[in-house]
Image (cartoon, rainbow, N blue to C red; front, top):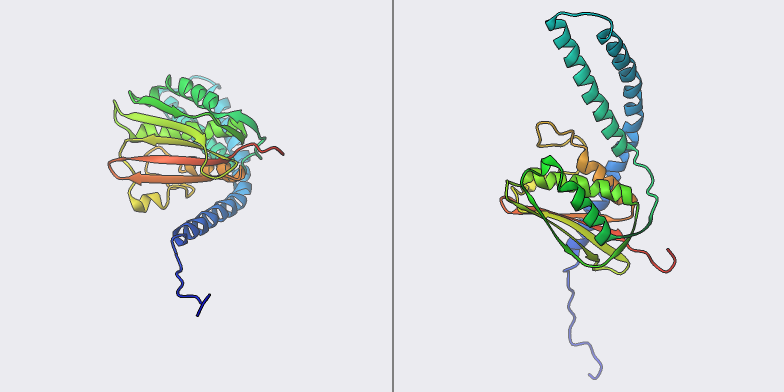
Length: 250
């Protein structure tokens, strides 16, 4: 009859995004739990390590040694420095400082980061490009600078000489957000590795600690933001940060 319902349809297109949101929430919770459990251990490691390093330095300055003794001392000091660096990185992941946010113009931030990183020898003949739209983020500038530096270094290591890294920024797809992205055209990441890249201590690098991307994730989480990764093996990788923008109340 008039006004009767002839049919109905239900669209499930949003389900993948819900699954992705659940995965992000679970990952954030897992990283936070690991960080809290690990912070005390890192502090406990730092105290005896400082005592050991100080004692070894006193031994090194105590007198003449033959070549073999000097070589052994050099090894111990080098490895102590490496351990201290690991504990420092671990603490940065385990208990990142609360962000001190302020409005930051993203084109200026990206320009400064690119200028400094272009002089880093680890760039290895890779070119930096940018596609910049005007946008302002509500962020801790020093922390997001650290995030960008880490992503740039990863992109450079994944690239071959003569390759290109592209940095982008602009307004986000959602109101009161902005985006920052770092894209390379390097080796890409296989799906199994991609599912683990934010896990603490997971690394595919011979000298890596596996804490860089875990710390990046923790910093972005602390800003109330999100990090998205798209990658195809052999075609490159793009990391995108979704960060808050100032509102009238900010």
